[in-house]
Image (cartoon, rainbow, N blue to C red; front, side, top):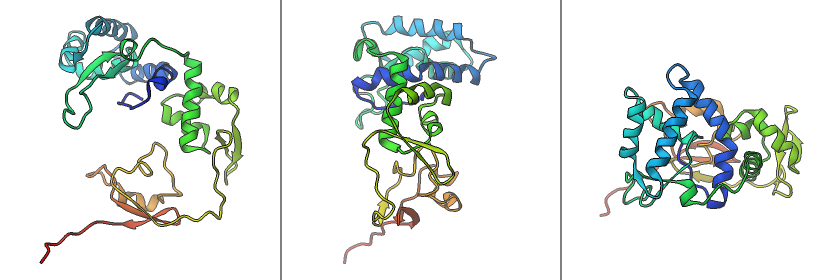
Amino acid sequence: RSTIHLVSAGDYWAFALGSKAARQEGWLRSDRKRLSRSTMEAAAKEVRAALAGRVGHRDELLELARRRDPERPTHLWNGLAAWVELVRAPPSGTWERRRADLYALAEEWVGPPSTTPAEGAELLMRRYLAAFGPARLADAANWAGVAVSGLEPAAERLRLRRFRDEEGRELLDVPRAPLPGGDAPSPVRFLPTWDATLLVHARRTQILPEDLRPLVFATKTPQSTPTFLVDGAVAGKWRVERSARK
C-alpha cells in the first residue's frame, strides 16, 4: 500500500517491487485528470536528486512537489511513494520525535534491489498466508493492494496447500502451517483498542459478527472499542474503572 510499513531489510525490495506497478496504476486512476505518469516520473527524479547521498526533511521535499503541483502538493507527494522508494530515517517514527519526518533513498539505506517484481509477488503471498492463511487469493490481493490477476502467477508457482471453505471457495495456505482442529479450545480473550485481530484488511465475520460492528467501530471513533472474545468471537466490551484508594 502507500502508507508507512515496518519491514525487515530483507523483505523491503520484495514488498516494494511486488506491489509497485499496482500502486502506480491505482494512483494514476485516482487523479488521471491532473497528474500524468510523466509528471510523477519527473517529480520522482527531482526527489532522487535531492536525496542523493543525504537525508532530507519532508518540508524540503514537499517544496519540490509544490513546484509541480502548486494547488495540491501534498497529494502529489503522497503519490510519489509509488515512483521512488524511500525509507524513514532515524529519528523519524520514534516516540520521542514522531514528527521528525526524515527521508532517505532506499537503495542507499537498505542497499540496491535484490529481487524481481515476480519474486516480490511470491514473497507477498508467502508472508500473507503465513499470517492469515488459510485465505482466499482475493484476500491476499486486497491486503497487498494489487489485482487478483497480479498474484495468480505467484500462487501457481508456489507450493501451497489448498482447501475449500463452507461456501466452496478455494483457500490457500503455506505448507506445514499449524491448522487447529475444529474442536480446539478457544479461551476467553481480552482485546485492547487498535488490536490487529479486528483491525485487519478483510472482515472476519467469524470473529466480529456484522450486527456488532457498529458497536465496536463508530464513525466518530475510528479506533476500535476494547472487546473480549468468547469461543473466538466478539461477545462484549470491557473497560477498567479506577477509584481513589481510601
